[in-house]
Image 1 (cartoon, helix red, strand yellow):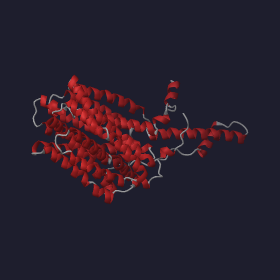
Image 2 (image 1 turned 90 degrees about the vertical axis):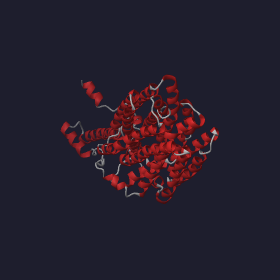
Image 3 (image 1 turned 60 degrees about the vertical axis):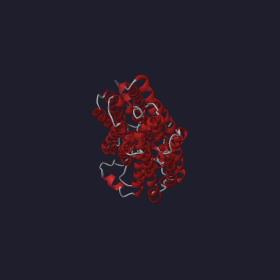
Image 4 (image 1 turned 90 degrees about the horizontal axis):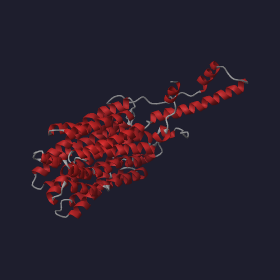
Length: 473
């Protein structure tokens, strides 16, 4: 029993790397990748499965399933941000999210009707809200400001990787092994993600251990100095008094924000509002494409679900690099001009997507449009982090909760708008492309006039954990 107590109070193994920037960023990127994968795994197969079940108006029903996911995110994001900031909790909510995610996958896989599918997607959205709110906040907790854009770019790369892998894997598994196979894969990957999250040590815990280590070294030095001055060993009481007088106090920390007032504070920030608007545009575009692209490929080129998945690879692989590029530029030059440039560069490719019957041109335009549209995410997330740093009473979970709500509302509305256009207008695909073009064009003006160079001007700031001395293992 004494040995067990000693083990419980001993320094955790691998404290430095388990709480360090590379591992925390990797875990969050993995979580976002798994979230993106389990979101997109069914996208390429849902219309085919609904058709097998005898449903009609497949695009509309697919759109409402995507809307249910977004509704789950919107409903749960604010409470999650509130709890995470009030209790300064990161790791436990992230672990809970994976349990909910696995439950939602099992429910959707076994759902006997469309109504239960909607409920399962809403639960999946609730789980997703945690990784996007708390996970990104965890990255901001450990990364110094001058590296934040790049690290956020690395973390968000997980979304592109998951979105790339999901549709082709879903299509292949669906054709070869049936409807259950994509969900079984998602559950297996969620188990791996859970193991990685359990290994993480939160910054506040790591900092406490570093300070205890420093205090222990100082305490031993105080005892040695006391012995030398007194000419012999001191009594227990004398040593305790000396330690109480000379040992510095434990970690200083600001009390966590514990109200919904930060949402109102962010409404007074043009930077926060512009970042929310650009986030909304990003979600709107990709939501509309998710609901209509598989059907466009089915109608125009007679592609199967497997071929639809392959086209998704060609379209989304480039987006894995756009976040890294814009994140690096944002750290060096600021967020404003890189966001404006990538928004302007995305516009012509959506116009060219309306040209008929040229598969090579279609894939190239889709890839370039998605590349430039995805490039705005890293600088926008850096803007959110700047809001949290520069506005009193606002934490990272609050700003990324706002990011999550804006994105999820857009992802909910986008599929509904896109699917309704595709199903009910004479040339539905052209209408969807024009809608995407107009949406991203709408972000250029607010970004130019109201966005700032937050990452650049805060260049010298670092996080408390980064400043703390880290003794070797």
